[in-house]
Image 1 (tube, helix red, strand yellow):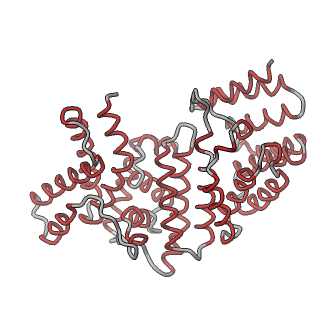
Image 2 (cartoon, rainbow, N blue to C red):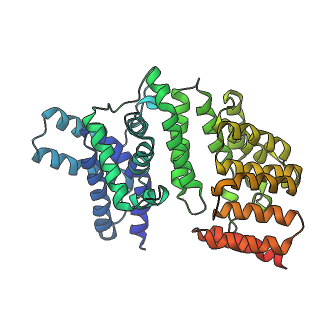
Image 3 (tube, rainbow, N blue to C red):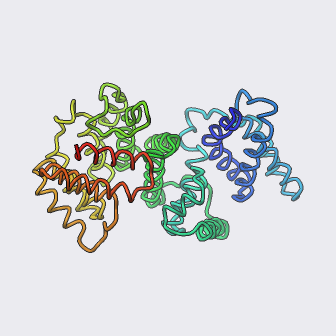
Length: 402
């Protein structure tokens, strides 16, 4: 890939959601906003290799998309007010004032619009991931275990529903704000996960943190907002140490804790003072146990097991039950962990799930069966799609096979 193409890709990650959100606010036309954003990226791929990368790539993309939208609206004889409003976007990324910045951020408006209760929860999440985060429809379809064409139809129906129901493009107030909060938090959580995964796009995690900060300023009395932001910060504090020089994933025990972002850890811990004991807050408390341990051996596993005991009562999902089993295995011995893992697997919910095999492998190794554990790690590696995860699992298997 050329330097110009790399610049387009890099600018697109940040600029695409801004362009789409801003044009939706001004035009009210979702399809037009997305089409113009995509045409701006296509124009950059054509012109930047020839003319050079502009000093402000995101601004260039916004201006190009704005001009394209202006042309389309003129040809369609749209009312003068929208034309005038669109023309005011000469500064592609105006700095918000201190008073209005937290509330009027276009992407925050867009998230609340996408998360309106008139839409099914799955549609809210998918639409926000596509429109706000710019996640490709193919990837969203894979996450929801449907075909790309099916997801495309769902996204189209969701946009149509917003238009026909007259869903306003704004951050709601009063009871509606609280009502819409769980859907917004779920979207931000998935957005962060998308960026923090082994082969994810780090910019998505950064965007989730930025939007969570905005939401926390908007709703400081909502403990789960503080809990979610704390969870993001505590996890993201380890970002720079998750891989070695060759790009291989490192476990918590292998990471250089002196290189963790201790300012982010401190901020995350301070947020826990008002985070309550909701699902995101409990996950943040678990993350804090890892983040504050001076060494892997000093990790307070009984505390982690306790927080998982509370979490599983709120969200008894198979994955949380799996993580609880691991925590108990480290806190109270592998036999206790394997017993809870067997309970989590009851009914087949975790059949073929690579993290469940990896958890069984680690507990089996701790119980003193390295050969059996190595076989389980290899089986887990066969089931993952992420190449970094596959290498990490095979490396662990090789260590046990020595």
